[in-house]
Image 1 (cartoon, rainbow, N blue to C red):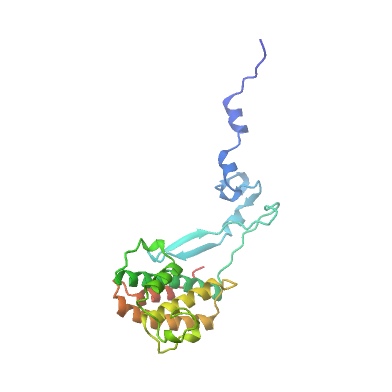
Image 2 (image 1 turned 90 degrees about the horizontal axis):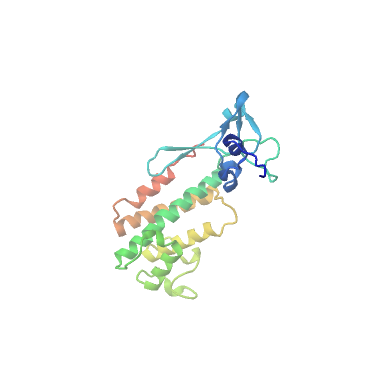
Length: 239
């Protein structure tokens, strides 16, 4: 009768590779406390308790609840997979990056909402708001052609489109503001860096401030667009 080695349960469990470790990256493993005040970070590199306590906390404000959402910064790994000593790095948004962040929220959430709301008020039967981005909403307005921009006969190719030079400060029709939204969106989307300098940020804020005042009069929303814009602009950089 062939000899078979009987393995006890403990030795079998100790040699089994955890499925969680194989399925996820090393950084997704929860920290496990080891002896002598070190912490296992998933890469066989012990971390001292002093290093662990030195981790920075990133505070982000939830726009819905206006409460802090606390996120602990994760270790920054080198291209070699953090061989050796891992270090924690704490950075914050620059003013230009934070300008870009706030402007992006205003454009994608508030200005796009105006375009969607205007279409529904014009009798269009639309799917849910989440199914439309600004490009789709702009094309619908353009094809519907109810709110033609001012001086549209002077456009080179069609009543719609053009550049900032085609819109005067006195052009305040709904179609003019739809063109302004398109131009602001394109400026952000085609930017080569995720930044918006203070000068341009203030210029766009002034343009948007005048637009949302008109939007409140045109659409009469339950929550005024002006109020929503002010809430975004009032958000401070919490780090």
